[in-house]
Amino acid sequence: MQPPPNLRLALCYIGAMNWKPWVLLAVLSAAALPAPVCAAQAGNSTSPAHPAVHSPAGPASTALQAPSSQPLGPASSTGTSGAPAANSANSPECEGGPCTPPPAHITIATPAPAPAPWPWQDRIRWAAEILLAIMAYIGIMLALSALRKIERNTRYAEAAAEAAAESAKTALLYAQANTQSERPWILITAEPAPGAPDAFTVVATNRGRTPARIVALSDEISLTKDESALPPEPVFNEADSHRPPIAMILLPGESTGVKTFRRDDVPTVCQTPEHLRSVENWEEKIYLFGKVTYIDLRSPDEEKKHETIWCCWYIHGRQKSGMVLAGPRSYNQHT
Image 1 (tube, rainbow, N blue to C red):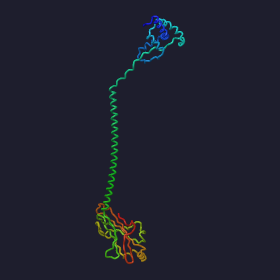
Image 2: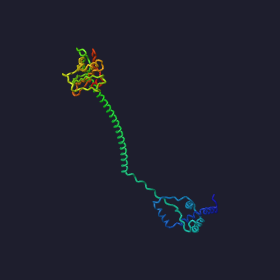
Image 3: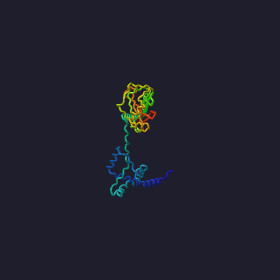
Image 4: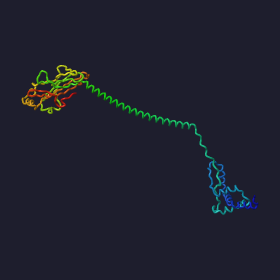
């Protein structure tokens, strides 16, 4: 059911009266805009370089859009035609001059250009750089692995060298010990001289495993209180040293006499009856010591000589005599 014509006319008038202030504001804004600004806006509407800016939402924007959505009647158009001059003259915000409202709308700029395509030269260079980086990483890892292997091999080589040195040292010691055990050793003993009472002979015996040749003999006699009174080291007169009259070669186990001392030789050593009485009372003692120098016939170096130093105590009693090995360590040694 449609309302009566009078009612419809009344409703349109009421609507026009409600929109009247906003329409008058839009008309005044358009009239007060200067011509250059309008020209610039017209020129900017075709320029694609300015960015899009949206005007703030408010009553003005609503007023600009409202007339297009609802038609106005004759009353509204009549009221609108006379309103701009009165409102523009009496507006307190313009301070007596024309007001320049913000632009009603700004055109949207063209979108940003799309990025340029990726050239194939750049793609090849990027792939080459990636490949080089991968190859460098692989090379570094291989180098580190090689260094680790070299370090391990070095440690193994050092351990092997140390083991070889220890083995060589052990072999050398064994060879030296074997050589020492195979060389001739001249040992000294004091034995009674056969066929002579109270006479004793210093006997040299080869206790080694190879033949020995005696090259020199030395012997001395000392009359002292005891062995502690002997010199710290035996002193031999080189002039008294003599070579055997014949080449004395001792095979392993053979012996030979190097010094014989009899009871009749005691007065010659004592020289006075007082010394002889002291020897008979054991207040003084007769020490015989000497040296046997020999070489190893198996050794090619004939200049390498060995020595055996010996010392014996001749015990002279009133009726019987004897001889035993005695003396400090330096008087009984082997080289």
